[in-house]
Length: 309
Ligand SMILES: [Zn+2]
Ligand SMILES: [Zn+2]
Image (cartoon, rainbow, N blue to C red; front, side, top):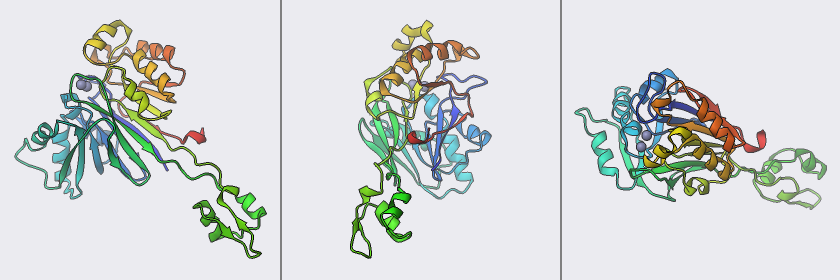
């Protein structure tokens, strides 16, 4: 089951010629999710070929670099004769503002746009095999982060062992894999735990949006496969990071280490560092042993299952 992340926009508050404001596109089993939609997000979606079939948009906070892409995106969806509803999730207390952003233009979308407010600890969206959780972040706005957490998967089915025990190949295999005991022709009962291994973990992606380093990011999910964290500044502007409610690359890496993350993607890079991100990478690697990435716009990342690597 592929789980793919496309970095649509990785800039800080001010875009550069190389980096668009924030936008993270996630595709899983034909479902498309968007996290933040800075100005120009729809063009990035065209450039990087993601398509527009987004069913849920998760907004971390209402600073322009995270939401100004919404009106344009909705207008294009409307031109494309979209009929499916779009669910927008946003921090508690921002519904009215978001609604006026959606309805600011004369051409309002003709498909349903449903805005719901989410707070710390909520499940913003429960899907068949995963959920998107909300957690508290520390920014100078009403803000939340989001964690996509897949359910545990069934344990591996030991085919050889099943055959050894005399289970005939066929429906009894799937019954056992579903967790039900089966009775053989000679009356022997085979229990699922004789042929099915322990449940295997799913995959987890945590996205902070803009924030100072916070414990909530560590607590929202165990050992995330990917942590996408605010890394607006490098060490040279550490004070400024604290003052403006952002993080340094090192601060992001310390959170990644404490969270037991496998990979860290440094995001929201200030325009002051345009073309000069070596310090970000170096300082993050000093604080975190896992894989550190500083994605460019358009970079894609396929997330493997934890037991695949
Ligand atoms: Zn921002
Ligand atoms: Zn912000």
